[in-house]
Amino acid sequence: MDITLTVNRGEKILILGPSGSGKSTLVHCINGIIPHAYKGENTGTLLLFGEDIRNFDIFDISKKAGTVLQDTDGQFVGLSAAEDIAFTLENDCVPAKEMHRRVQETAMLVNMKAHLDKSPQDLSGGQKQRISMAGVLVDNVDILLFDEPLANLDPAAGEDAIELIDELHKKTDKTILIVEHRLEDVLHRPVDRIIVMDHGRIIADKKPDELLALNILKETGIREPLYLSALAYAGIKTDSGMNRQPDYQPLREWDKQLAEEQKNELHVEYAGKAEELPCQCGLEIKNLHFRYTGQKDEALKDISFTVAPGECVGLVGRNGSGKSTIAKCICGFVKPDSGTISYNGQDLAALSIMERAEKIGYVMQNPNQMICFPLIYDEIALGLRTRAVPETEIKTRVYEALTICGLYPFRNWPVNALSYGQKKRLTIASILILRPSLMILDEPTAGQDYRHYTEFMEFLLGLNKDMGISLLLITHDMHLMLEYCTRAVVLSDGNHIADQEPFEILTDDEIIEKASLKKTSLYTLAMNASLPDPRGFAGRYIAFDRKKRANNDRL
Picture 1 (cartoon, one colour):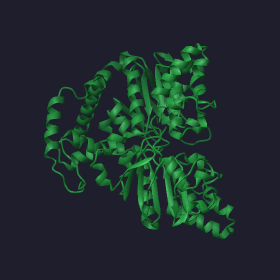
Picture 2: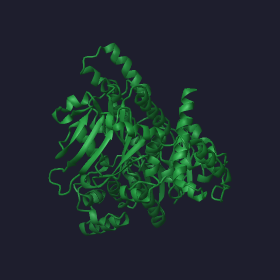
Picture 3: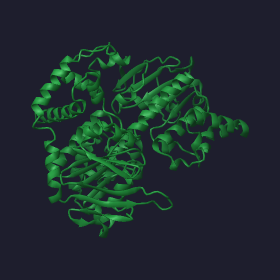
């Protein structure tokens, strides 16, 4: 790394960059993890409030800069939310009365006072993050560092997190640094500057409007907001004065052209598959009910849907809506109370977990729950070795999976040297190598940069189209659902509330509110431009973009 950067007091800054660009390393330098925990060669100076950081030990630094980790489960130490917030105060031997007051005040600041008695494991993803924030804020640090705060949150919870960070910034005037891949979601609230990193260097340090008017995002492999892509397709050039009302006439003309070209094409792919479903097998779930032991309410309430051979279907909804529970039922990790799950006409109830694994691959949301071996190569090779595949073939297929998932340079590394996003790709590779006929992926793109995200999803679509492998994608990423799923099943509080094309879901206010989703910016753009059919525009854009990407792949 070769970094020269000044962060002023009270600034809120977003740090972008592909995986391996140095974002986390920069954060580790600021919070003292480097050099106190991670050793290495260190040159140059880093001043924290005017003093050389080398004059502080890691404890001193923690009193000035607090970090909210991407994996909130890895940050909890208390048996209750209140105990977790109070942890640092206990270490400082703060009197009990003072400790109680500060925990209450901090919990109110993050709107979690009503949940202090709960175990961290009983909290939703968004609530866990709020408690993690409180655990840092209670020590009254001056700098807040957020490491991918949106990675494991549903769209509404992610929006709430960004609003909370913005509210904290306004109320406390603390210095805030956010490391995140999801640019459009972070820009739900304003930031002062956006820093773009690549190969250990800062390649841009600009105000948001200035950066979005440049081509740096595409060149660096960072996803630009969808509405910008739509404006570019329409031939509208954006500039640093994007807050001024642009001329939407070219967009209106482009939409008319799309509507004319697609009037006999839109919905064809989905409608064709929908007509074929009754005579095909694939995955079929009928009237599924499930309640966890000791819980009053059912986690799944009369769920029914299908995934035909070769389909790519999204499964979406807020944290705790039942998405992962459905996956557990399909794979046999838990047994439904009633209802049936069949695959290719065979009832799965009589099959063991191992027998189901021969047909259905499952990639869990938390990679740490799947990893068994200390070395990356051995972890990916495990599935083939248990099936007595020759080592020569194993090596070829392991290297292929490593390449697809962007991990080939690390093939001889220990697993512990990988970041959270890299561990996610490792677990995906370990399942991909087995080539099941149905793959269930729980948050497949969480923690991945756009380049690896795109490479991986295009690889999955290749398996989907060329080999007929069905895909069921459990996701909070609305971009993924829009771009890659032909339809999506929506859950809310264990209920099945929709089964439609993605663009229809993300332009339906009632579904969005019930399932804690987020309205696509394409719809907002269409409304701002006074297009005659805003919902239809979102669908026309997605169809156009899919065709354009498919044509580029063939070139």
